[in-house]
Image (cartoon, rainbow, N blue to C red; front, side):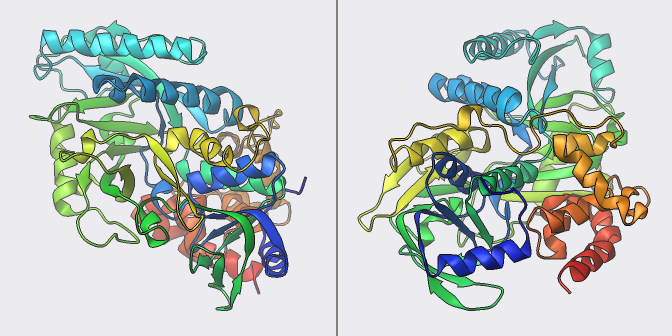
Length: 497
């Protein structure tokens, strides 16, 4: 096995070696699915190279709701199979492969004037069915407690800003929450690298036959591969023109947690006049609330960096305000983010109704393309691809990601343990040469300087935006990113001088 560190020197060395050799599998796309495929294939003993034209988690994989969920929504549409697959994969992440990055999240649906008694009974029945799937998936109640009805006092304690008028209690359910979706992708890539996979960012795929361009040097080359996997998500048709997807845009806004009384549970508010559609206010330990999610079809060319429109922001604020004592205003928003999800094409109707199932397609040109799916089930998607390339059994169901095993030092800041697991001590040790790196990158910002440094020396960050937007997520709050940008740029310049 190789080490997990992704460095500029390793990138140059492995890219040079690939242009004169060959691999069993070439993966195109550095999101959660592509990195999952690289890890699955490498852990089965195949030689693997992954190329990504931008950076790890540059596309859809960093714009999720940061949930690892058991598929409760799919039960409402009758897709029990997909719901069970989601519950099973949630268990894998929560208890086996990434327990340092996934934690239980209490979720509250207030029973107010907008939820009739019949609807309340239906929601409660759905929660209990989801709990049965949890049991079938093998997740113990010590990891995810059972759902239950709660009173007005407990509802207000968990979600202090909830609207009190007409409130008759709430329904409490539990699901999984990611520390950060981009951190999961980076952990997958680094774990794949530890099994020998070559992880090459800033390398574009020019065609479906192995042609590549190094975006750093501008040089082109060819990678000889026995199998090529297209894991580019919503951009799959660039390499596989026959691909049929219905892209859906999802928008979130970011609020200070103090604005909602620092809730310890998420808040669910139904979208008025819509079936099976909700807005969630999801608390994060950094003192933030992520509010989402829109679900609208994307017309025209796909944007490389989707942006939230004022109309979409207003929709989220107005809907969430229906469940709050004090309505929200545009000035409350400290950031926003948007992503485009690759839904499988279906019959006419809302994108919210389209299945989140995935498919693996083998083209006439020999290209393997993985389509659809969602973050929670990335591992199963990867397994379905690699099962077609080798008879060696899959190992990833019980394969821990970097940072998932062992016991971190008690002297390490809790924030680092939360984000890096058992690698937290190595991250903190970077401050030995400069103790100031254990300080926040700017006043009032939770990210520590060592996190930026670790992104450069171990996680393959090549630019300041890599650090701000994907290794730390400082860019989710506009003022945080602006305050930290000088330090990020300085650390990159020092490392690559």
